[in-house]
Image (cartoon, rainbow over all chains, first blue to last red; front, side):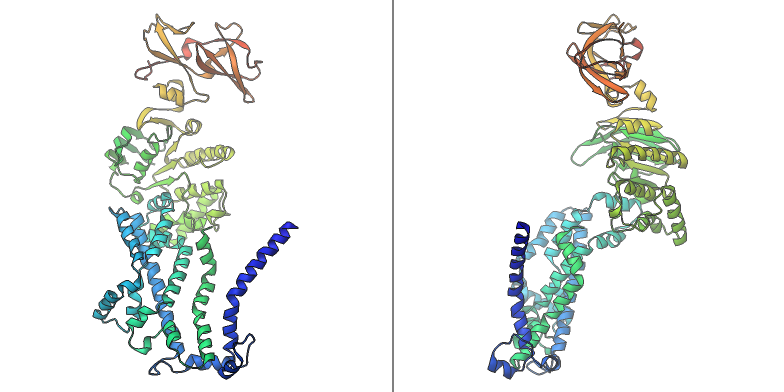
Amino acid sequence: MTKYISSSINHCILLMGLIIMIVPVWIIFASSTHTSLFINTNGLQFFLGDNFIENYSRVLFKQSGFFNEITAFKMFFNSFVMATGIATLSVITSLMAAYGLVYFKIKYATIIFWLIFITLLVPLELRIMPSYIVMSKLNLVNTFAGLILPISASAIATFFFRQFYKSIPDELLEAAKLDGTSSWRFFIDFLVPLSKTMIAVVFIFMFVFGYNQYLWPLIMTTSEQYWTVVMGLKTMYGSISDRFAFVIMSMIPPVVIIIFLQKLFIQGIFQNK
Amino acid sequence: MSFLELQNITKIYPNGTKAVNETSLNIDNGEFVVFVGPSGCGKSTLLRMIAGLEDITSGEISLDGNIINNIDPSERDVAMVFQNYALYPHMSVFNNMSYGLKNRGISKDEIKNKVNDVAKLLEIDQLLIRKPSVLSGGQRQRVAMGRAIVRNPKIFLFDEPLSNLDAKLRNQMRLEIKKLQRQMGVTSIFVTHDQTEAMTLGDRIVVINNGVVEQVGTPKEIYSKPNTKFVAEFIGSPQMNLFQCKIENGFAKISDMQINLNNSLNIQDACIGVRPDDILISDQGEYSSSANLVEYLGSDMIIYSSVGGQEFSCKLSSKINLKAGDNFKFNISPSVLHIFDNTSGQRV
């Protein structure tokens, strides 16, 4: 009986947390399915309206921006390319950096690692001018490469992979050596598959990090063609229901990525494999 | 079938620790040699140097007459079974066994045949598609063995492969390893700290202590004629009784007990050893003592007693009726005595 009561209390608390998080999102979603006129006269809505398809298709393909050169659809595409690029490159660079630091007899590996780690103390905002100057000298302003490259190395991801590699027993490398594997093949055949769950975690974190970038793309792009969703949120004009629809759509890509990688993500977080 | 020769092998770690000191050893074709010694004596280091996983500070290792000091582990053609098996956790049993063959560029059909043959030999052919994480300890052990066998190496190296198994399985695997080695005739080196494993498996045993080879010989030689006090104590269970004594005019004096050595030795500071099963208990015994503790082992029992403050044990059939606190008489024949010089630790 006490077990039943305590489990009920737990569920009530969880349910309340869920409601606190879901209700605002639901109100935005429900309001986005009404016309702006209706919202302006009746306030935010809790129940769905009839204008879902009309509102969303208008927002997605309407030309917007200062010069009407971009659609919301193109912004989603830009954000997706940027976030995927940053996440993919971060995974690759940090996997390799950690491999070098742990498995090769580098004399000052620990010092090098801490130097990499210290870069965590230097946020992007602090190095935004030098980064911009480097990118502009390389003629990478208004390109995806310019958006992606300066933020595609992650100290925290390198740290995660390094700690993980250190937990792999040496015998595995020794057995593989006796089986005639090369350094490159050991990386591809062993470390990459063994780090699968860690890769999922790092990928999701870096995807969300890249997707949420605002200041960097704002500085790196002068053409509306390279606007991202977060920039669009700031500058999106139009009626209130259009803005709500845009907000709801902006949540979709990270949610989709998390749904796809959820199983690996949870295994990676708890490392229970 | 191969011939392995170690010449003055020394290993000094960067922190100055001398793990192996001037070790020389010859191992014949098809021989099963066991390195035995306490933890940290350098036996695993020696094995790892043969495998190529550890650099050699000085000395030479040659295999089939070719020096292999600087040859890459994969090109030495040796296979190793690790203590914790070191199976590849993300690969199936089949892939675990075939990985080394793939790296050698062997065709897929040949790999399949070889792996299947070895899997049948080890009775793991039902497990080929499984991952190591779902296998039991014994099955993992077999897969690790299979991975070594399938490559058909010149030498098998075993680094305490049985220490993670329970007692029953350990005995069973021990027998299987011995049988397999006989069947395949591949030169093998087995490292263990368990003297029973060493005695039962090895054609020859190498007893190592503090990085130095104390004795090399067949199990029988090592047991019946230990060269040093260390070997005498280390080999045999329960361990050999060692008595500190003075030897005068062919008699060993242990407090008021005098043992006739039938030998005219004169050593002030000596140590005599008697195996627990060489102490004969009988009513006509020359010496007497009382049992402090009796351990019942089924067919045998072990009696712990002391003479002149020095403890000793004797092993006898449990049919004899003796309880803790009882007095008993015993005899020690001069022919079963081992005499060691206390200063050098060497057999006299």
